[in-house]
Amino acid sequence: MRVLMLSWEFPPYVVGGMGKHVAELAPALGGQATADGPVQIDLVTPRVNGGATSEKVNDYVTVYRVETPALNPADLVNSVISANQALIDVAMPIGDSRPYDLIHVHDWLVTKAGVALKHRWKTPLVTTIHATERGRYRGNIPDEASHKIDRAEWQSCFEAWRVIACSQFMKQEIQNYFEAPADKISVVPNGLNLDVIEECTPEQMNALRDLYAPNGERLLLFVGRIVHEKGLQVLLRAMPRILAEHPNTRLLVAGKNGASMWPLAFELGVEQSVIFLDYVTNAQRDCLYRVVDVAVFPSLYEPFGIVALEAMASKCNIIASSIGGIGEVVNHLHNGLTVYPNDPLSIAWAVAQVFADPAAAARRRQTAFNQIKTIYNWDNVARQTAALYEIVVAERRNTDW
Image (tube, rainbow, N blue to C red; front, side, top):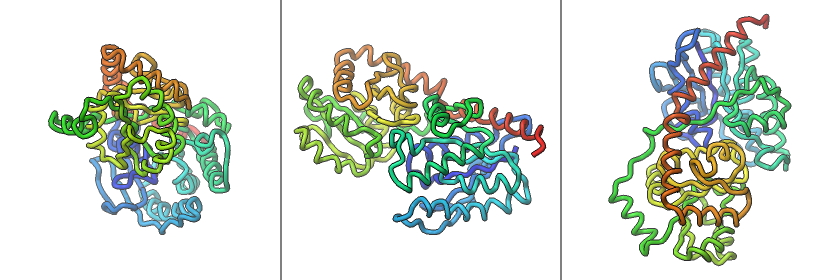
């Protein structure tokens, strides 16, 4: 089975969860058995941060990195849509000479290319919606750029033979916003590769404790982009209550431009108990998960929450908002604690629970780690995706299109 996969992100260019998803899914999916033979993937992506223009990831996956026109920050959405033509120009001659059975696009950024090639070849389109613009803005469309993104997301769902959502929450959002029928949407979760979780030596852990907790402080950790939807402002507003009960507590913030939240920390009077680390590498992040007492994910909007899987894989205590996909991954009192969204008092309560009962916290950590091995592994995700491909190709074969 020949598959053309289109994604705006692929290593070395990875911005967020979508890039991580595609980077892990493609190699795991290549070679999966189907009725039409093993899955063979040509992955076409912009060449943003370098990388070979053509690269074999394994025997079944080839990546083509395409030079695209420079994006205009003042008109980013139209720039991205226009740059799709470069992806089309590379993929089209390959597909013309060696037809594809299916096209798989990831998110709105490559919708134009996917739809154009679908109609050129009459090849079924599968689209994965990783998040929605309306979801980020709680159902609103604040400006013209957001409207264009929303329309591209709608088109991607409308044109698709099947839509993949990473959670039941995202499935419902796609139904609500784009009026997609439920039987057109399949839920396939994200995964995590335990092999990429970095080891952390006792010496490294001791060094981090000495650096950030020299007097035995309790450590909280926030990991994520410093944007409103990730909810760092809610966690900061919880800090006065947390410090009132546990004054020997510090919050570490791992995220680029985290210092932009300094004014709020000062306003709340917690600046002495918050350390902004800025960007951290994956290795640094994984060590931090092993050192801190609990990681807090206070998201206001979260289609899935790969960060939660990363923490689970590192056997870190987790507190997460009971919202979106992350609320499906983190089950209260089972593999972590969940809190009400946008509720600082709820976060303070959960932190106190972790501190008060280390034995219960340890049981939740082990349960979470076991779920990474059995549920959220990429082989499982790839098998589900290949099974969906098989259904789509069989249905296409039985139509007159």
